Image (tube, one colour):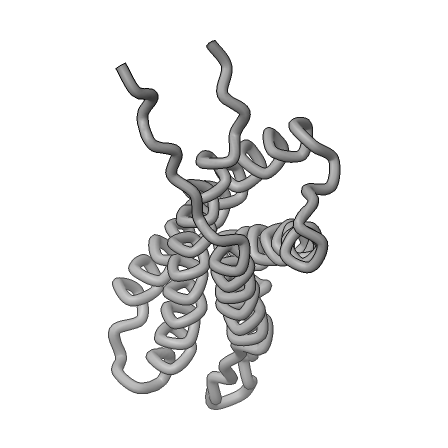
Length: 167
């Protein structure tokens, strides 16, 4: 009986997926970190920043950690694409696989927390255009984080193909 065919992904595809992950996460970080709103009152102006809310801070931290990991893996992937040799051998294959799994689900929890916070804010601030821009901007950042999660999950699938076969 013939062994099952080995599925391989060209190394440049993995590089493209990692670069797309990085782009989505960078844009998400910029959008959520610069998200502010000033509410004009009769006697005082109230300035709301995304860092005032724990869920948005969690999104920022997951995106920053995701960017750091993706930058590291992108450097390893560029080395692999340019030389044809994997840095670190079998140990790095396992690091790629488990790291991609962890980071992808970590990004998903950050986006989910942000979506939940956005829904809570929508329920409490239903006065129309006043806070809607702030809420919609936070939703856009969470959506970009979810897109980054999808690319990171695809990278996790690609890294599973490289895992050493053990009998």
